[in-house]
Length: 183
Image (tube, rainbow, N blue to C red; front, top):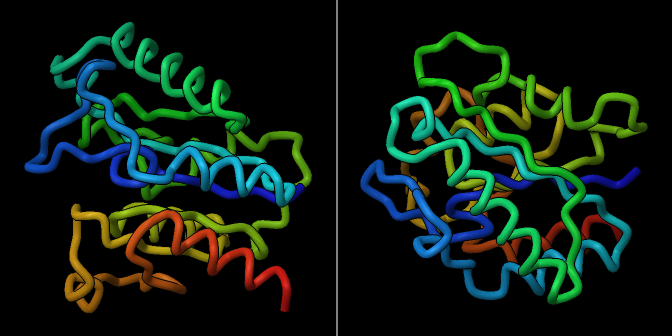
């Protein structure tokens, strides 16, 4: 199975920045072209898994119900426009909970892919933070870092794990990934 792992905030939708969270559906805004890119991945045989830390639930900034509403509406909008996401996994624990699911740990990916035949060496994790890149590397994926605002290109030099590729947005990342498959 061809798979792609995507972070949510800053990749599929705009990250509110400043340590804030998307707390309701009305605050959720798709990144320009994100749905079209998801459709393109689907058309090229990729299953898409969303892997996202959402500690705002544990911090009491929004409820589990609000998170589920955001997810339901996000998936509905993507499907309405012809795209498909296989699964969405969230770690809603506090940042210091010590759980196995919070990125950069790999628990969410392991649970989402249990029983599936996925070659992680030919799989990509696309995200906009060091946590995403480290998570991808920890499970054995290739990684693409997006310059969508959370962290800057110059921050990479301070990371213990470096991305395989750096792109401006999801569209550029997917174009690069699809070219890799043609080699």
